Length: 269
View 1 (cartoon, one colour):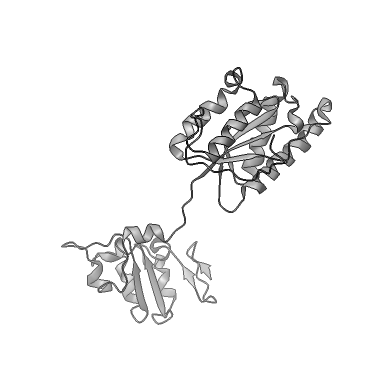
View 2 (tube, rainbow, N blue to C red):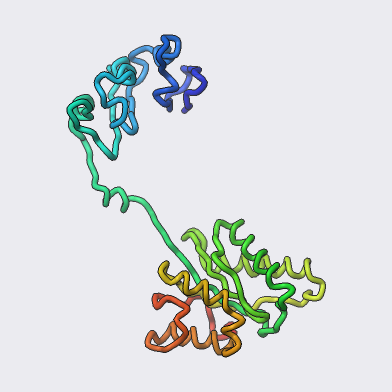
């Protein structure tokens, strides 16, 4: 398999990719498609065939007519049928068609956002202000390195909040393992006074709908103001009760489409 470029042809391959422009031109020596014999190819596939090849007088049509002995298949999502241009005129009636809906459903699309909450071990207030910004930034770097996106990271001396966009190939538990483990090791190396620092084993992971992302961002950004009224333990217990009982009343910081993952009775803060 090879791609034709720099107007050079190597006939030792079986599959070739090329742009019309790379094999043809206004001058005869530019028409390198003629370096192949007319019966060289068994199959010619034309992508976006509604473009130049659809017009009868197009210069590019010459290439297709040169390889007329090959089976030719045209591919397009937007076929053209006008007085001057016709896909059907050259490629004949479609042998397979599909709707836009079918095309969309044939691919995988995900939009996974999690509000992650976890505390320092025994809720010790290790993360004072002089450390926090650097720790949050490093955690964000771990996320980027592992193909995740930290929308916002915040928290208080005894706990952290992350709004994390993830792909389905990585589990929540693995994401937390990478972020907590990597940041803990970095904290030990970077801050001599925090040699005994550790994260609690447990965590809370709550799904967030896209429409609620601004609300969660504001909530995480305003942690200091929020914790003038509630301790972390009160906040966390309130969120956990909400996940079990949807009728509970809490601060509307999370989507009502939530789920809790990865917490055990022993590991909850």
